[in-house]
Length: 285
Image (cartoon, rainbow, N blue to C red; front, side, top):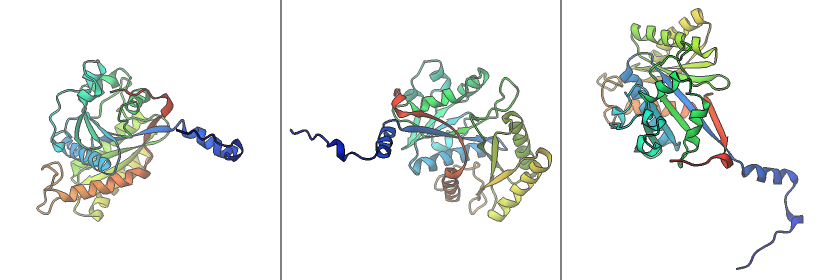
């Protein structure tokens, strides 16, 4: 076996050498997308589950933290352990997380996430742990229940700078009221750091979806002084079944296509983010 010694005079410029050194310390980032209650829990859970599924199908390493529990059935799962057992050291991550398909891990968090929030421990340091897994995540979808912090505000993952929160709204008057109330409560706690986007479930077409969004956005603009963007719409099936009121598998291909488009759009959204240098990341199970 021969060893080739490079000629020092053939090495690149200082700029090339600096780029090479930086490659030894790659920055690994985790993006968080919260889905906040703005109507029916089952509808919200279905959208969060399908969104996580489509992000994984696009090549992301996704963790779905499900605080409401409504996303499990959509993925065909029956969780045995909650995030709380990981926090308390009773289980490792591999024992808590379920893998319904490649690239997606599901974690029930009905007990664990509220416990973290109550202890004021649901911050950047906690989520950075997902970057230290043997299979590091790059995206966390949070199916939230609207848990209130010790300070009395609805909890959202906002670490530095404005970050997007997705709300899933229906088309009825009660849905519009619920969406506005959710935005108001979350905005009060986020201190101006939340950017809201509304996904309209059950709208027959984009025009109807935008009309529903306009009513929510107008109210938010008039009474809260904030802008609310349109994230898209999820149409019902041909027979009128709305996502969340039937299992969204082959029986609801329209929902799958709508959430696939949404997953693609999230790439350009500003999201809460935490990061580490890869050289500093001890892997764990």
